[in-house]
Amino acid sequence: MDDVPLGTLAGVLCFLILLSGFFSAAEIGLMTVNRYRLRYLAQSGHRGARRAEALLRRPDRVLGIVLLGNNFANIAAASVATLIALRVYGPNAIALVTGLLTLVILIVAETAPKTLAALYPEQVAFVSAYLLTPLLRLIYPLVAAVNSISNLLLRMFGISVAPRRTEQISADELRAVLIEAGGLIPKSHQAMLLGILDLEKITVDDVMVPRREVEGIDLDAEWPEIVSLLENSHFTRLPVYRGSLDNVIGMLHVRRALNLVLGGRLNREDLQNALLEPYYIPEGTPLTKQLLNFKNSKRRIGLVVDEYGDLMGLVTLEEILEEIVGEFTTQPPGPERDVFPQPDGSYLINGGANIRDLNRTLNWQLPLDGPKTINGLITEYLEDIPAPGTSLMLNGYLVEIVRTRGTAIQVARIKPYETETAESAEPADK
Image (cartoon, rainbow, N blue to C red; front, side):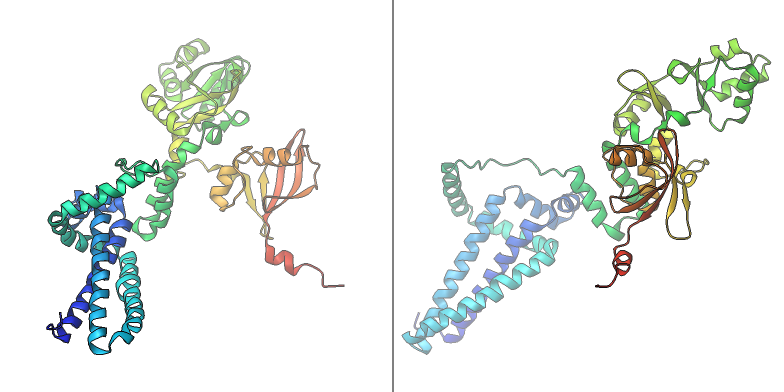
């Protein structure tokens, strides 16, 4: 080696340091690249993505070739640097050169390349794949031997080295991806996709029209009253019952009643003959399942019943779809009927207002894991029926009971609690 010019040795040293940097960047780029985007690009025909995906099918081989190359470059660079130090400065300079080389490798061959690869994993992974693929074929026996020995050591400690199935993404992780997509997905599309993911967590109890708001026809009522209800109803499908909603005998499509009117046959008997069989839905049914049930049964409306068979409410296909696309019916949405903004920033809210609708409309964070209405939320918290004028702090919201009726809260005033305002209102030190 004494015959090799110093310039050549210096050039070899620089090349080895850069080679070490390449292997460092390749390791981070291939290990941190987004696998789902990589799969998409590979399926789209991107050649670099195809090579990178093929390499990552056996990550042990990728790590083997990368670490072999990195360690070879670092050890060879240390040897060349030692030769240069001995030739130029003598044995006393070896320690100094070792320290300087360690610093150079740390910065040039480790930190900088790995940071670059972490910032641009796709570009680094694709370029690396072009170079690592032929290199892996060239020294495959050595890589295979190293992997076999390392895998044997892992098995000795009870660690399985069998190839794993493709990593799957959970619904919560997919939700996080959609939220972080930002401007890549239009806000309207993002909201719909998130709505679809949320269907699994929402049940028919959350979106149903509660029993007290269900509009139906009592066949035992006076005939003029029945005709008046048909003339003024805003709905196309109505439950028909005798005496009470616990005795539903069928569902009436108003169009069938119109046909009876046009045929001059609108009477109690023909109206009953025009009824469709009622469709019942058990309480707690997830919206995803109920959406499929509506599709399979060719239905658009169902009656929600509890474990005792008592009617709890009514749910329609439109209400499920509105959980995905938002309000689209011509009827005024629930929160607009139940919420009345006040000049001081508070809201007068009907006790029967749905909590989920309030959170979505007003961007609030009222708890959803318990009662479905404001009345239920307050009474569960207090474990009592409060008197008008009662005030409380509920999940960060100032609540005042304005009016009650019987055993239920009819109107409550709610205002989001403002920390800054509360702090500024505190009295000065005495």
